[in-house]
Image 1 (cartoon, rainbow, N blue to C red):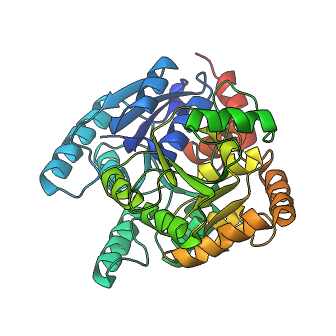
Image 2: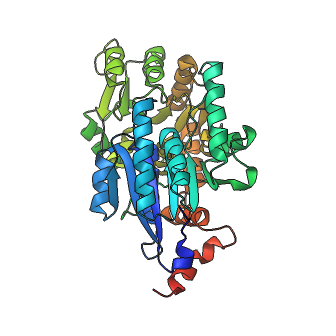
Image 3: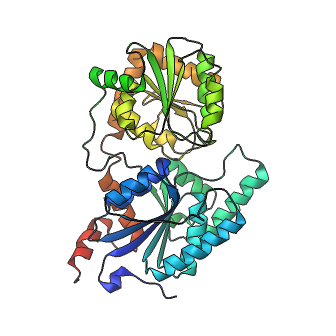
Length: 403
C-alpha cells in the first residue's frame, strides 16, 4: 500500500496512537499528548487493548477511541498474531498518516502493522524498556535484539527522559539521529498549575485518606506491578520501625492481593492501600515524603506532580529518574531492591525537615514550566512531520494550507 501524507493532501494529519493499556503513567502521557494536539492540524485516534477511566476521559474530550481486545500485555502468540492482523487491517483501511506506538507490546505489534499497512510515518515512545537488570541474561538479550529490529522500521523514537534516551543509544536500539528526548506532561486538561502544599490542602488530603492530621505520612503513587516494586515499599515501612509513620500507596494493579497480604503483617493502620483514584494531585499534599522504589522506570509523572506540590522525594536511581531527582539537591536517590536503604533515606527526610524543605523547594523550581502541554505538543509535531520542517512553524504551515 502506498504511503500517505497529509502534507500533500492539504488536510489534518491522521494520527493513530496505539497503546496496550490506556492507564498508568504511559496512558496518561499518551492521552495528554493526543489532547495537546491542535485539532486543526492533527486528528488523533487512540487504539488500545484496554482501559477504563482514561478511555472515558478521552471520549468525553471528543477523541475517537478504538478498543482492540487482542492487544494484551502478556506475550501470547495466538492473540498477538490476531492483534497484528486486526491492526494491519485497521491502519490500512483508515488512511492514517502517522502511527505512534507506546510501550513494548503495542510498540512491537503496532510498528510491524504500520509498516505492513504502508503508513508513511512510524513513531515510537520509549517510556522505559521491557528489559532490565533483574531479568535473566538470555531474556534480556532477546528483548534487546527485538527492539533493535523494530528500530529499523521506526522513523523517530521519543524517549521519556535523558536516561532512557542514553540507554536507547547505548544499546543501539535505533540510529542516534532518530532519537529525541521528551518529558512528561504534568498539566491536567483544563486546570491551572497547582500551588505548593498548604496546611489546608494537607488537612483535606489526609481527611480524604482517613489519616490523622498529626501523622507522619510516606506516600507512593503507581500501579501495583512488578516494575514499581511495591513489596519494597512495604518492607521499607517495616524496616523504618516507627509506629507514628503511616504509609499510603495510591494505585491498583495485579499485585494488589499480594501487597495487601504483606501489609497485613504490619501494625494496624501502618499502610493505606488507596486503590485507583482520580484525585491524585489532591491527595499528594497528605504526604510528608514521596517514595518510589521502582525496579525500572521512564520519567515518572507522579514524581513531577509530587515536586510541583512541594513534597520531598526519594526514589530509585534508575533510567531517567535522575533527570528529576538530583541527589542532595532536589531529592534523594537510592539503589533499587534495597528497602533498608530506602527506609534510611525516608527517615532522613522525616527527621531533617530543613534539608527536606530545601530539596522540595529546589525540586519545585527545577520542574516549574518544564513539563507542560505546549512542550509535549511541539515534541509530537516535530516527530510527526519530516525533520526538514521547523517544529515552531508546523501549526502555521498546516493552517495556511487550503482546505
